[in-house]
Length: 452
Image (cartoon, rainbow, N blue to C red; front, side, top):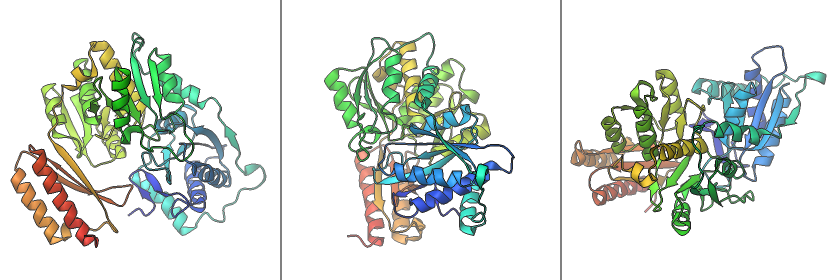
């Protein structure tokens, strides 16, 4: 069992264990030791971050730890998580590090690693890093003199990533005449994203592009799509695009301000790829949280879906193992493996825009390809992550709801991998009924947590 790493790296409140400078330095030392691998040459690790205030202290601690193990550091500054993955592989670095808590509030932060090929680390490698820290086996390894690492700034990292993104958009198409509302969540994409869409010819109406260290994800971005919804209607735009703090996910709104989530985007893009015989093995990879309407839409287009556990890393693992090239989550993480190795909000938006241009259809017209079943999600905070079905009253309620749903819905209960939350998701035909049942289950869990 991993103690430090969750579903997306190490994460927590900045300056509180495990998100301390001391732990960041230890993570840097352990990762540097592993990625050196005993090879006799200069090694390099890329470090990037989002716009959180705490990013400065954690970055400096990581740099110190990595350099103390004789590995050089390439600092790229604020850049989307997928941009750091791309820079890591394109610059032939040994690894990449992202300092970000994604969609969480500014007081949180996180550290996650990419290997040399730009993919997130497998569980066994994260566990190896943890064991190195816990055992203190490398504490006495101290390179000296010329063997100590150096830190460099890569000034053109953003430009490199912008060029890469533009090259994923069809050369025969552009965005001229299109009006786009773009919310960058005051996060890592605040410079890169507007440049990409503008250089492809769109008129961009920017929101969330004035980060101050504390306003990342604050009533903006993909976790608050109402911002772009209202802005689209106000400016009569063709589409609204909302990224999260590290820009690895995207939620969009159609020309009427209606939200279009990750399931709809995957349905549109997967069916388009099926049409052009580009979807490998005619298969889309999604998670258990995706709406059953997505399964139905893919079947109608001649494709199929395989499901994984929640977390984009598990989607990617299934894609690589099975030889698939498109996968993602309802939350807006989408992986177009023909182009990038991880979820990329800007890239995903570009692929959606390419379908709109190619088909000469509005987003609302394209979104009709999927009709979602009513789905509700209830979150409740927990003190500890115990087996929730060990509570007999909770288990009995779940069994009762499942029997009422029969084959026309489902119940999914899971813990968040990044927060002390229990998530209860119910899908069914009657939204009032499933909302009532979800709240009842959450209320039972609250009682076991000592809440009234």
